[in-house]
Image 1: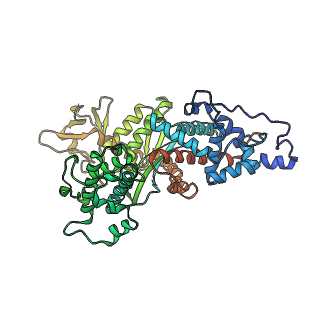
Image 2: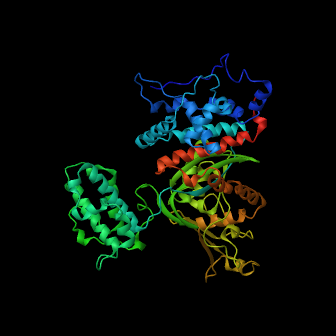
Length: 536
């Protein structure tokens, strides 16, 4: 049953009240004071009421204590056991979590793992990420406390490695087969095909994968896939519930990804053949222990996920405003679109929010979408065809009105004909040959010299890209894009201090849960570095 933990009332026997004054001062000058003054009372316990039964039962451990403790766990790089010891034996932890009047802290060794299981199960069932909601709520509070104005954000993404082993195709197929056979062995051993019983023998994996030669003329991979098909059919013919297990579903997925077949119900195992490696997609199963992880090569190979962080900043102060966590094949442009939608909830067309990104986050369509939602997309560079050095750009050569009609050229000459094809998004203008003949810029002009008239025809998107390129050369734009450098250091911080590539969990939802606490830990530490905000 859910029970809310009201703010702590100090007892006469409170350990802090009975401390010597010099020790009280040391405690109040430590990180524990801003934590218990600002962060702890702001944790929204009501948000997590949905995790608990509404029937009369033993009350839960205080949610604000659990959330607060898990933040401290990430800040100090502790295991659950080390965190529990710190709560029991360190006055600073007890002070930060307002437990100094408690005879015994209301947490045990299983409190944190049980809470994470509840959060995970709830998100799998509903799709709602309670931790992300809490992280972003507390991060907003921290931004207000540090007086960070919501005027500029900078965005970056980085890959997060899964803790699963990177398997070869042969190791993958073997492991999927072996996992299903173990499940067969638990539910109905008699159903295991005779030539697959050897999987249960000790040392069979090394013997099969590393020591034996290819079976006759067929490759070892094809041989293992034929065994996969036998196991698939055995599962369908079994009276047990094996076909409903996760092991069977992964075998079916693996067969579909590693071969060219779609239907395996009546397929002869002798007809199974491995797909050419070049035809494999990056979202195929990499390891059955982490079925959500995908493969991507960016600077180096990675099996896992991608984190996207949005940092709001003002001067030297910055915090991660919000974040996302996807498979590593999720593109920066998709992250950009998602971020624009998310930020649009709190923007105004009268005072556009500046969103500073690198070129991978930028397209003209995204820039248009951002402007319509009160956001100015500011790329550090543009990806695509370089600007010609011998010709002027369309953006600097021609002027357009609100209806996308060319009104004049750079020399102020007006066209005698102008048109905009909205369906093709193409602008067309025609100029007098006599006027163009005497123009000093005709060698660099983008105009096409024709018999009756000189014609300019160009895509509106290309025109807008040229406008962006021109703006990117201004001092104001350069100063803004230089400010993006701060967010580029976050991947290193998360790898070195928060061990993001070594999270002790697998799967996107569980990994995202851990990542959320790391984001919040990073933000909370900003309070510790600003002693002027500490209230006494």
